[in-house]
Image (cartoon, rainbow, N blue to C red):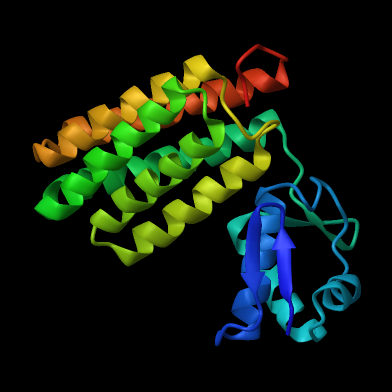
Length: 230
């Protein structure tokens, strides 16, 4: 088996994993990073040939991606989800509800070592934003949100939060916030981490929802061509 690349994400088919899971990961990453373009038609045969696998794992992966919302059916064909202001709003409403609930639960369940990790990740995201390092910021940002969801001690909440974040990212016009917005998000991460560490569940939930809504507004602004959107 060979190494496949989706943008900056690598998927190694040589690893001892089920082929279906590897195909799912590759397709998911390719859609989120827009290597597969919004609205692009997805052919089971073409994708199977590209990935050097049978059509069965491709078909199963596409079905799972339809559940997440990254793949849609149109005119009898499967396509990469096509962004719209309405769909983006709906996706961020879903993400906000899930992540606010995760932050509330994390405040109740997070262990001291997890709180330390959240503090480190939130500080790193702010530092990377202040250094105008978008790649570093995105890495810290994703790790921070993943850890908040993990700290909720609810595997379903963790899974669906990740799905909602991927859907929001796939629907964005651009993948990066401007420096000012990234710095604002870094400060938001710090506030969320502090509230979770203090076990202030309501404050953590409110801070997370405000943060997600802020990013939503920047993303929606991109549809009207506003500066700083994503």
